[in-house]
Image: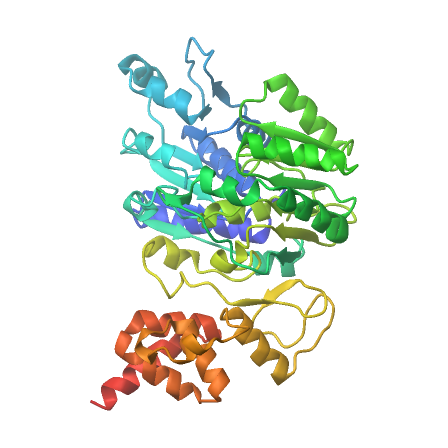
Length: 480
């Protein structure tokens, strides 16, 4: 197999960073871009120059995939598993992170392992890898991920890695024909009543919303209307929710199976093989197919939950993006309205800025506003005039109605109109501006005293470019 041009560029950028003595670097490649093959090729080049490589993963599926990619580039890795009793000298090792961590604390294991020149950590955004980095102070380290946002907010990736390389993004891969374009459909209303713990919605509050007959019925109705017959992965909240969703599909006459982290290996392999052969339509799961699962024939993704995690959202969507013979697109059915918080999967995102400024709102971290097409109901960027899926063209009247709706004010109560301007939210300010036919300058005048965060929120709402906020602040300084 030959590297694609952007994969070759990725390796060049990594080497360039290493030459600059940046020993720990993030390799950011979208799901479906061939991340595993790219770092496997680099592993081969390292071995050919006399180096020794360690690849760390975290899942059975991912371990198998990594092993396959290494074989394709001509390497025969030594797999360190729970059953490994003797560690033999090898050019390349592959291990699951927990297995390796239990062993690396033993002096005898470290001695047998010897000097490692390159460590590759796949899905490096997962927090369980951080504890291993300290054991390889002299090695070059590559953290590979599609979403360089740490799963643990208290441990941002920039605290462990000194640089990030991103040779290509999702829109470019779609344009070049390497990834399938998505058509996104989502819930119109925000999901309310959810509680958070440690940065994610709690299972209990999610189940209070999603574990209802109406929600199961809605998921099935949307599947029938939008993606009937398509090979589908449905991501759920927990095991109970996933099994109930599977049973709901079966009751509706739609073939489905369920998979989770407790499924025995033999049963897991049987289900995945049957899914690959097309023996059933919908694979319900919880927590096992978000990463390291490669099935290009999938053409529908159901996100049957809400999540605060941008990484989880992007990983779920990416499962349907790989190209396959006859595949022109894939459907995303977003039952949790996640696109409102994380944006559309196929819109540009500044991952470098997210990496360097993990806690900073606004620039790079803002979400491009979206709207629902009036004709076909697909979710599209708020700024477009014509729907790329059905050709519907927006008039000025349509656009103003859409902005009111996105601001959350289809109806304005007398209580709202009597509210003091300095007490209104940014969305309320914009809704009032439209209703009263005020100019943009009025809204800016109301928001400037609140500082940059309010202007950045307004810029995201309106779809303005990054420089707009700086311009408004500069104008204010000139008038002082």
